[in-house]
Structures are given as structure tokens and as C-alpha cells.
Image (tube, rainbow, N blue to C red):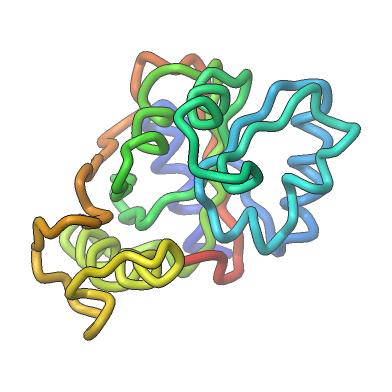
Length: 201
């Protein structure tokens, strides 16, 4: 937990609010209470999917929007999530210096962490934390991205061998790479939730 508290302190110095939890039960309790009566949007977080937060917010949140829960990945569903009161997502990696790295194919998640919703909540497991920027970028490209190609059935070189080829093939899921050096000024409040468990890709 010491590593998480140290990172939390660093993130606070960069303009973020923070929460540190031991496990997903504590995260769930926090989210269900915090998101009550709000319009909530979701990014494609495997951590949120595994915790079934979307389902558990039924009757608690004012509205819920997540394109995974629609028949197809629609622009309309993404826009509703983008303009929510609160957007909930994760990160592909975060450095101990506080740099948050996300890689997207469509760009909806990256966009929603920069401008649009009233606030953003990142839920980040300890497996996403790397020593520095270079290691965090390596993780995003060579660990998170190949796993996500399987999830979305993308036909990319990294799906075959688990290594980034810096490809530009059709179906590439690395069309947009964002690095947050500190809290973007376009979103009034961003909370970083750090969890002392491996969570998501």
C-alpha cells in the first residue's frame, strides 16, 4: 500500500483527487455511493466489466451509458457516455511520476478523459503502475494493447506474438495515444482510484 499512497500524493500534486483502496469490494462500495443519481458513462474497462459495476448501478445511477451494453459499438452510445456527469474508466499504464497513458482505436475513451464530462474517475489496479514513462509506455503497447486486440478481435501483428510492431494496419487499436502529464483543465474534477490488486489489462 505504501507504493500506492506515494503515487496518490504525486497525483494530488498534479491536480488530481485520489482514493486508495485495498480491494475491489471497497472500490465497489465507493463507486455505488458516489455515482448515485448521476448520469454515468463508461470506457471499455475490463476492470469495471469484471466488477459488474454497470449492472450494479441499475436503479442507483440516474442513467448509464456504455457501448458494450448496446447491440453494436455505436457513435450515439459513445457520445452519451462522453457527455455524462461522470465518466468511469481505467488507464493502460501510469508511471510513478504521475503520467497516465491510454491507447485507443476509436478515440472515444481518450477524448472523454480530456474534455466533455463534468468529472472523470480512473480506477487503476497496482498492475498498471510502472517505474517511469518509458516503462509505462512499453506496458501500454506490449501488454495492454495485445490483450485488447483479442477482446475486440482485431487482426494485428501484436495479437500473434504479443509485441508491438508500431503497425498502421487496418483494424489497428493504437490509432490514438494520450499522455496526461497533469490534470487537464477542461474537466473540473478527476479522481484517481488506486487499488492494491491487479485489475484489468
